[in-house]
Image (tube, rainbow, N blue to C red; front, side, top):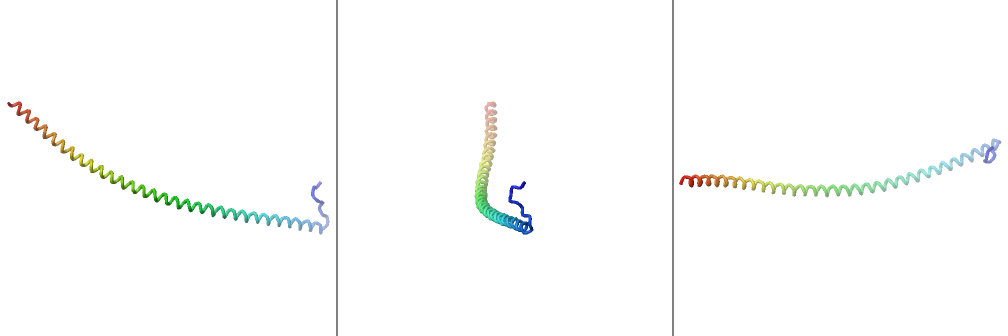
Length: 121
C-alpha cells in the first residue's frame, strides 16, 4: 500500500519519526530563509543599480534641458532682434512710400497745370 518505509507502531518509533519530520521541516525552513535573504540581497543590489542609473539619467536630462533652454533663449533674442530690424525696414519703406505718393501727386498736378497751360495757348 505505502511505497515508503513502514511506519513505526511504537511510541518511541512514532516520536523518532516525528523528530525526523520536524528536523526535515526545520532544514527546509532554514533553506527557505536563506533563499529569502539571498533574494532580498539581489533585490537590494538591483534597486541600488537602477537608482544609480536613475540619478545619472536625471543629471543628463537636467543638463540637456538647461542647454535647450539656453538655446531657446538665444533663438528668441535673435528672433526679437530680427523682428525689430524688419519692423524698422517696414517703417522706413512706409515713409518712402508716402514720400513717393506725395511726389506722384505733385507731378500729377504739374502735368495737369502744363496740360492746361498748353491747352490755353
